Length: 230
Image (cartoon, rainbow, N blue to C red):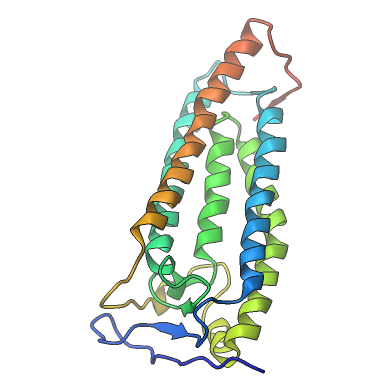
């Protein structure tokens, strides 16, 4: 048995109808729930392995003040990524597992939430004071989530069928296309999920004092320096 989707036409900002593709079953595909749990486990895996290692790596530009500037840049990037994830949550929270959202950030690319997650990982890495670590964090997160994204796309294609395939045809996977922006006149959201997204993002700022404490520990000889990286 296949599921059909009702396609709301693509309309401008002032349109009365919502740009949401609604599936008939309110519970959504159970496979997506498993994938989301896998995504969270993989995120903890990345953080648990890479962050302690970064604490033992000294940045090259500590003496010149470059570390401080990268530190602040990383914090700004992380803050921007948190805002971006909250923006995505505003649109998707009330429809997750039930409808295919194609408005707002999801009109620019198909995976904006992941895109901001990669950005957040790079910001955390930069807070260590190293461009190399920031790049490694972003690339590692991309590598780990790439398979999850592919699986999610297969589930969505099976569930929403032609509606999702049309969305894939018209919307890039990663690189935002601002020329195809479209929005809803009315936005239905779940504030509780928005607050959870904000809380989880702000928790990442805990890595900032961690890197500073590890810097102090290296300076007084309580922690070794494994590498010096730019």
